[in-house]
Length: 216
Image (cartoon, rainbow, N blue to C red; front, side):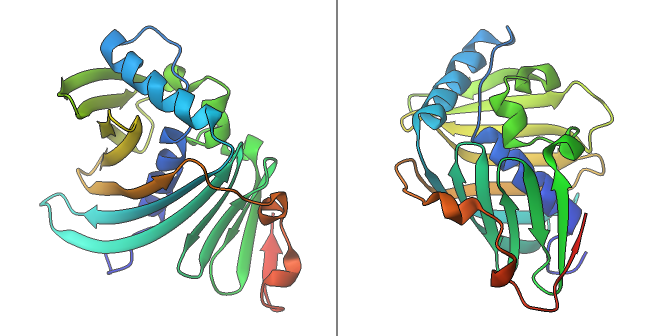
């Protein structure tokens, strides 16, 4: 794999992180893990705007780092804007626009992403239907929680979360895929009181180069 993260791995990590920022756990799984995740969900639900800075590191099955990406994510309700260099993913609450940083924008509806871990899916309360989870360890400051997809056809085996219990926020996530490669998602900072204008989450064709093609 080249220095740049494999795009499919990065997409899994990004979408999963967005999901983690939208927790709303309802099912009776591990009650201790549920109590911790519920606090994260309540904090997110009460926020009117969230700004997140993320580091993604891809590692092979021998633990060797293959590449690093720095991500900035802005969220407001079910809408979000994600930037990584020239790459951009915009969700206006109905459609998702994925700009490749060069000359192509791929447009898809939320209905088309039904099989992915999207923020909208989590806000609908269906997260607990997709995963089993258990609390591995905790102390006064952090908790380690493991999640396993119920659907074995998912592209990963499990996810290990590190939750900051003091801030009720995700600190780190390790995603193990079916080839035993790891995507390490580290949350560098989260601002739960960020303020964003609604127009930030409206697709504007004029902001992109004139030669950009849109495919849907």
